[in-house]
Length: 156
Image 1 (tube, rainbow, N blue to C red):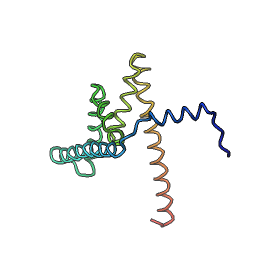
Image 2 (image 1 turned 90 degrees about the horizontal axis):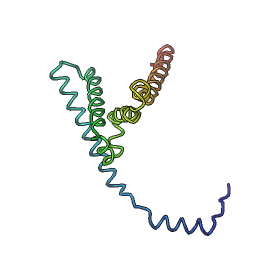
Image 3 (image 1 turned 60 degrees about the vertical axis):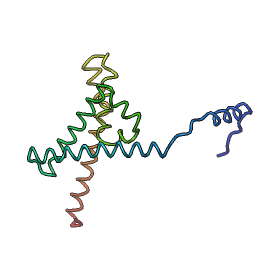
Image 4 (image 1 turned 180 degrees about the vertical axis):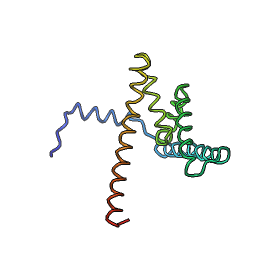
């Protein structure tokens, strides 16, 4: 495919745009994301040990309440407007961990609360959560199907 020729006005605008474009501090943004994401994961690990020590969970079973607690606190912080500031500061460091999922779910609900509890809050809360759950269940089904077929054939 050939490139389209730009008019002199377009070229002039591109020069002006390039001159005024803000330079992004990529290294600093990566460091912030790493530190905040690491802090969230450290909090998750502390919660896991808390559930193991005080509630007699095993390492295998402590994961579910840990994830639920992290999501709950992310939703709580989003409701108070704190998680937005964390997200502005850390970027992907706050969006990639499971807390980012909690933030995304509750943000959609808060945004549409004027439409009522059922259609606004409830309907928009499950817009994101529904697709995540759907694809998670579907992916689990496909993996289980492949594993079953491989074990039937004696591969594993």
